[in-house]
Amino acid sequence: MKTDYLNLYSNLNEFEQIILQSTKDWVDKYVRPKIEKSFISGVPLSLKNELAELGAFGSIFPQKYGGLDFNFIAFGLMMKELEKGDSSIRVAASIQTSLVMNAIFSYGSEYQKEKYLPELANGNIVGSFAMSEPSHGSDISNLKTKFKIVDDKIILNGSKLWIGNANTSDISIVWAKNENNNIQAIVIETKNITNFQSTTLENKSSFRASHTGELFFDNSIISVNQILPKSNSIKDAYKCLNIGRYAVAWGALGIAEECYETALKFSLERTQFGEPIAGKQLIQKKLADMITEITKAQLLCLKIGELMDSNIISFEQISMAKRNNVKIAQKIAKEARQILGGMGITHDYSIMRHMINLETLITYQGTNEMHILITGRDITGISAF
Image 1 (tube, rainbow, N blue to C red):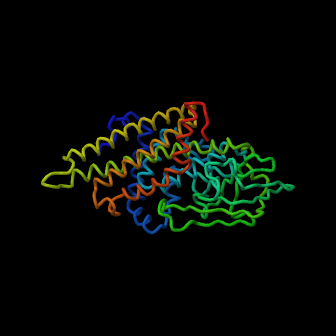
Image 2 (tube, one colour):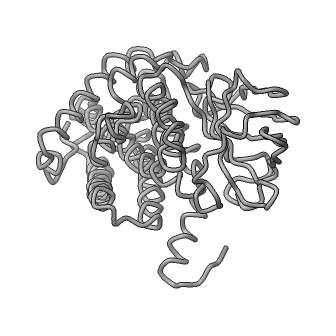
Image 3 (cartoon, rainbow, N blue to C red):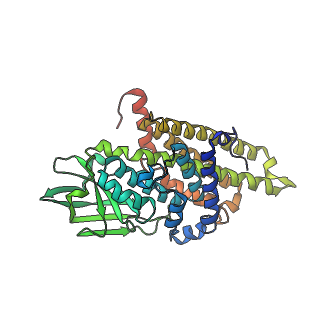
């Protein structure tokens, strides 16, 4: 099915096209045969080693730290194809790369980079990124998790909620306030910390094929050397979200493409009153609207990737891409489900699973409303927060 209406992907360089195709092949091999069963059961697929072999962990970082020196367009293309398989797969790669490794790479000491990044890149250890709290999602300036330093130790108290890999991670990047009320990041080694618990959230309706949970710290003791020394403010915490939001923008595009491709194929094969339903005017309108929105989202992703590769991107521009692409993916998934009729709600097709996952993506790494206000503040110069 032709999803690249303006032949945008044919203009990618050779390396980017290889990443696009190899990730597509990887998803066909490892994800599609098992993902519906995983979603129904709520038992995540165990693909840590396979993702590491693909290069999905830390691909954008230098080779000296286990990375592959990907440009951001190649990284985005990989995220797009992974989320075509399922949001849980893209999230697994993105948490490790966009959040955990990015925080250590940006704010860690050289010793911390050399210790953790190669191990994260090859999948020997899995990370989580602990920012959100039970009472604070977008408003991280009011974090309740706090720490104080006594001699050469950190004493940490608080809890974190909605944390991917919470109960399965080997390390966690925990954002907390110090005694001066400044926010810093601490690398927690989950097996080397006292008075610590983690849980997995049960009975989720969305993101069912991924681990999500909560972290609890009760006078937990950690070495002071585990603070990321270059993290000093709330701005550092927010900056860590930029690559994550960029990955969501590409991933949502992947969902939109997947749902469109499924609906188009079905409409050409499904006959009613002696002809394919693709010949009906209302079906063609749905499909035409879908491919138009997808094409605009592709252009937006490629331009944002170009700006990131040129290092002239703003977080407001990334915010727009995340908000737009998730919203158009929601609309396209809904229309695709309607084209499939009753078959659209079965697990014979991926559309309903994607629709449910999109309900998480619309609030993931900033709600739709928060991203609207980010753009509004940027264009007016007036904060409505």
